[in-house]
Length: 359
Image 1 (cartoon, rainbow, N blue to C red):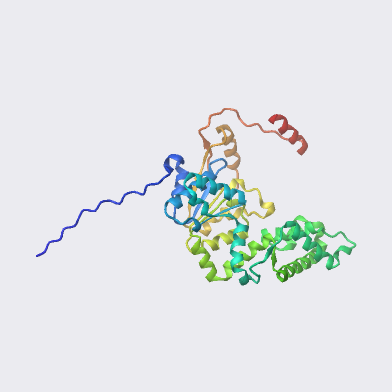
Image 2 (cartoon, rainbow, N blue to C red; image 1 turned 90 degrees about the vertical axis):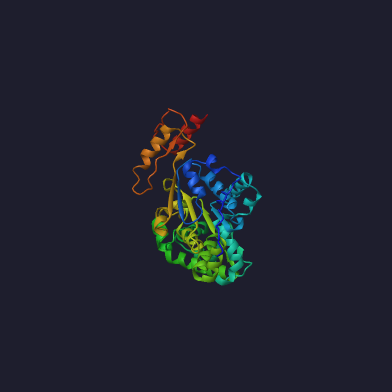
């Protein structure tokens, strides 16, 4: 009878990385960088190395064999994305320069140029900058005869602001007018008419403004299942910087992009949400665990910028926030000088005081 003998198998060699991640990062940063699959929320306290963490995660994904073009890094300025990818390239190699990085608007423009016909536009549609958008609104206002109005009527820049805020805050024009421009409440219907004509004008001329880029990319991904699957399958790993500053529309876009794989990492700080006036929605970062119940929450709490007395003061302030992610900032930097609370008489006094202290 023939005998069979099993050979002793050698254990698989551990992957060798060019970068010593454990040496270069603290424990929390390393957790975020090494996490590959599934949703994650990184709560990055002020000065905690948020950008460094994103840069190293880009490099780690590439070292793990992920194709650079399948990684999507969304930031709030193109310069920020370029700088992160430049640093990642210097850290690892030129492959990181091929990662897809940019703003929500630039990414939307890229996708819409390929699929514009599905949202009723030509693929060579034109993008209006802020000034051009205001000029079109001014033209429509004058064509409708509102410049002849005997009552005070909003300028084209004000109408543009009202429209943009309504889109970014995901609310009706009347809500913005009532809350921020109550002196124009009597002109609400006229402003609505201008907005309707503005939309028709853009569609007829195949032009979009910056807000339209977000509106139509969300519409495209939501209404066209085939394109949504195609785009989501291509961008297998998504990272979003400053998630606390995203608006409702951007959060919806992010969810649609990650719908196929759920490999989404949102990075931000609930204690640094200061752009609600332009549509940023604090709920996006707070509700992330509701959108992704299995999400990992990683806290970056070690500060590399301030001394402990300053952080103690900061921790005490944020402790009283009605809704927050618990975190306690700490540092290894030495320093005993405590922060001083100064109550300024007015803005001018405050400016002079700061200048004098700096000089």
